[in-house]
Image 1 (cartoon, each protein chain N blue to C red):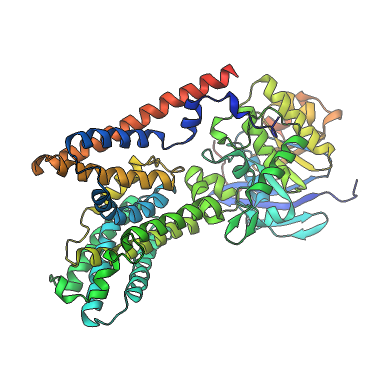
Image 2: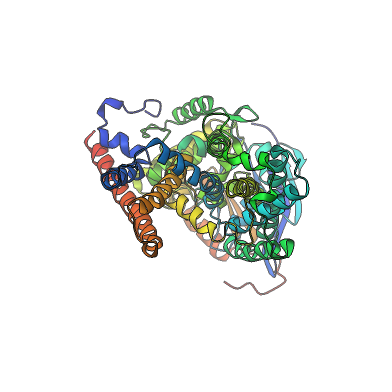
Length: 338
Length: 256
């Protein structure tokens, strides 16, 4: 009967684990933590984990934005340039008006980011340009605007007000503000994707655009929306970036888009759209953070680090899909047996 | 039965660029009957139902629903009238579960910011039960994991759920095995017996003679015949499909 869910007692542990999509990545994280902590006693300290969280917070925020875009079968390659442009513009404002409240700076950054994101959205929906091409174009355009706007100069720590610098690093709530920002964004995006209609529509559009269309969902509007959200969160990330690194340079967040895609994919987001979870992406960002941190701690030569990082990301994705396949097989077996 | 048809189209036409997909078609269906719509590939069946559903609104012609003249400019207009379409390609979102698919595009909300999952699940289960769809293990499974027949049942149930008055089925049995075809045809009959209007598109005349009350034949974008199923034969219908007399000459050479 449709009304009777299968009794949980019949399900083995493997079956219950497999229903939790993030099993693979969690197991990989555990294995990595054990391996690294054997080599470096400092790794498993609170201080070190605070460092890791600080380092991945901005990545987590932007990876969540990237995830929403990828779920709709799109991709936003301009995130790094949007972060760089917003960081530069907000830093200039802070330099000119040192009295600016950090909250105003955050709001200004998000507004600027939304404008940049809506350009992407217009090009993709009204211009009918494939997202990968459109955002590849604005990747260059926005980065070019950083140079034009700054005329090649940069903003240094001494040109920023103390209140702005404490925006990311202050700890009035125990944890660094940066981590709090990431957690809040995580909670909001989680709620948005799982409990609201536009969130549901994002999955529908990515899962089957024609079905979404005939169901009366305004597909182009949803697609426009995710690029605006992406810009908005990149705006937030740009302000936090300038505050955390106490600088805005022409190469701020250069190449960051690839890390956000990596975090999403490692976190189980389907690159062809339709599926992906907030928990998965946060774990993906966390895994990337652990990898970077561990490679330094166990003194891998800097010449090797980038290659090792890439290799570990590939390994994580392979292990994840292998575990997932095995667990799904055991579900199928359990189903036939019951 | 009401003395006016549930849905009546008068002289509807649709053109895609140089192709006249429909020219001056009259069509009607009544509540409580299964009206079959048949024709060869390219006859205009899909264009006709997409016009009714508001996907590709007609270029000209009039639509009467329940005796009143209406305009259908988009899927929402059609849904507001109680017209629901079950598409050939199912139009299900594979990654979403059964409940989410049943309510796709019209989710129930507790508030502006909150979906009402509990009541959606309850209504979903009730609808499936009322249609005697009992083979599902859980309504929280992603539809990708269901069989072809189950998916078709979900698609049909989705169409019925919102107190629809006219259900259009586009080749509902095309991809199904014998037993599953049987189930779906039973379901089609039950819809009509409930008092809904049903338009059934199929290439399978055997299926059609099993459930349809009347049959409309399209050929090259024109209506060439209409039969009462119990008073005609498969041969007669086949003849109309392949060689029915066109009432007016198309303004261009129609190519396959």
